[in-house]
Image (tube, rainbow, N blue to C red; front, side, top):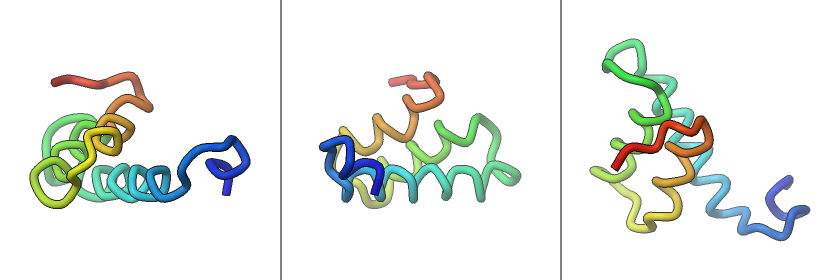
Length: 65
C-alpha cells in the first residue's frame, strides 16, 4: 500500500519484502546478514528481475555483487 501511495510498483515491493522475510527466517541457519541471505535465495531460486534482488539487499545498504 505504501509503494502505491509513493507511485511505485506494489508487486516489486511485495516480492522484495517476501525475500527479505525469507532471509530473516533462515538467518539462524545460514551465516550472513539476512538481507544478503534473502537476495541470494531470490537470485538462485525464483526471481528473474534484478531490481527485486537488489531491493532486498540494498534496503540495509548491504548490497554485494
